[in-house]
Amino acid sequence: MPSDKPASQPTGKDRREFYRITVTLPICLQPESNQAEATLIQRSVNISGGGIGVTLNQTFEVNEILSCTLLLPGKVLFKSYLEVLRVDPIPYPLNTYRLHGRFVRMANQDRELLIRHIIQFQREHLNRHYSA
Image (cartoon, rainbow, N blue to C red; front, side, top):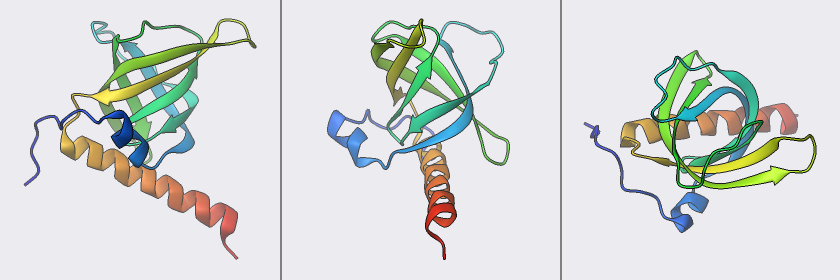
């Protein structure tokens, strides 16, 4: 039976060992301390079992811990915490930023759930673009 305790933190090398894919998903990022109900907004998200990259209209501080909520296919609500690694300003449009973050305090079973969905995204992409 899988443990409910958080997995050890992935290192930079580990994060790159997870398969990455860019998909459009409803997402909400907010400070960990913000207890307001998440408002999900459809965004293009580069996601892996180690973290995400996403373009936002707001900035967060490096090392800040965010609450990350994603709506995965099948109406699966996925919640985790994300440590902000980097926030890069994008020149156009104004007030746009690229946030890079890694998942923290994630239970092994949650990471496995996320990875299963990422594999499904890859399968759908391959079927759509490379099927005869």
